[in-house]
Image (tube, rainbow, N blue to C red; front, side, top):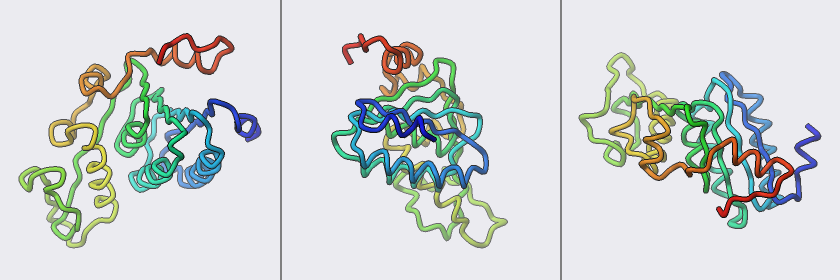
Amino acid sequence: NTDMMTNYGQELLRFPLNLLYNGNSYLIERVAKLEDALADVPKQLHLELMGDGEIDVDWALVFREVLNHRSAETRLITSARSSLKNGSVLVWLLGDQRLIRDDAKVFFRRANITEETDIDPEKVWSEDDLQYVDSYSEADPEEASHAQVLHYINEFLPVRELAGRIIDVRTLRQFGLVGNEKLDHFLATTLGSTPAGSDE
């Protein structure tokens, strides 16, 4: 993708990330590109999430690791142009600045944890909140990853109160997670030819 390459070395690097179902090969390529982009230490990396799918929880943990290893000089802006589900929520929350479409929604489900799963439930929720699934005799690795994603989401939002509920932008603002800057205005000023007029 040549237009990605021309962004390198600039103040602001746009990094689109499409939310796809079963997008494994796409995500493998995006993680590699993201690592390359961050290695160039852009001043700002603008991660745009859009699409009606979601980032699988295991991939969300990979993105978290990559983004957490970025240079302290790179400011991460995450913008959601679509509603966010599960792992996608975590990736969006990792931004130093978060933008979201005004009518977008955020949703993450509870984890179905079996007793063998080795994630300490007390970290995020009490035993009573766990939904035990008797039909599985073995721990489900994907559910363990989902529980880990919830553990990280809980650093930003109270998982016990909000899991299973559709969360609107007003609620995200109450938790101080979204700037009041309008997404369209932000995109116009940072990506258009006009200089950014916001005193961010």
